[in-house]
Length: 347
Image (cartoon, rainbow, N blue to C red; front, side, top):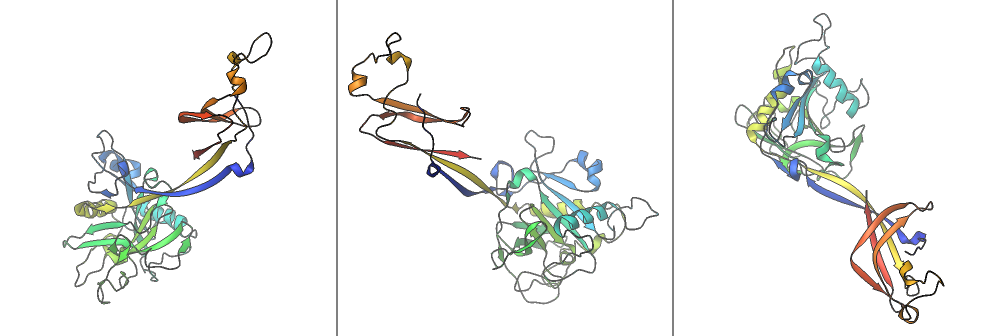
């Protein structure tokens, strides 16, 4: 075994962006939607609904995303205490996402430049294990079917903006009508999508790729017009025990198509191991040395030495082995050859 200290120029740090489907098995499109009756009837079911890619009790079932409904006035669910108005499960959800997205409990949500009079929304939050680093902007394709069979197709406007907007949740894009980051629209009449993919009630919501969330504007979802109506907004503005997340789930599952990709930045350390012509030509194996005299036992190893490099170990200053790199086959080395081995460490 021979040792050599690395020089500063032997190290290089590189970052690569890796994209993959956001759902189980790196699938980009989710076509099957299931819920768990156990989760729905539990305490957590009062706040959100978990969606699986298969039966929740089946082997390999995993949560893909969660659906929640928030309302500033607490509408859409029963009150915690009938004597305290405005405090319910939906007001808690609203406050939670108000803190995550806006960072200020006194600030209203604004969708596409419009501040809805009724502050309520749906939240689709992708399971943390599914979106890795973040959601890849421009890959959203969400279809929601209304009771009138009007299929609303939503995406983010990341491909149409030149300046990215940030809030407490990181980057923020508008949810517009379209697919795969490409907005579409029709005439700017009440209830119809306008040229930038938004409605007269603002955008359809906010796309937050860095926290893996989609905030849907109920005021825009409740529009009606020549293109049809999704009717998912004002239906919930009352203190009832209606399962609001379940209603949105049924509209998404009816369309059976939800496309999304994840994105991850992988940092790699490259270490360049250099064996110059005068280095690593002799073996440190004790079998080549006489135990009594310390002489080299084989003349060929004196006059024309050669070695075969098979393993590279990296040590710290305390002589502790930190990493081992195995070569695919031994590398022949003598005074006439120089070797350069690139070792890649991924984190």
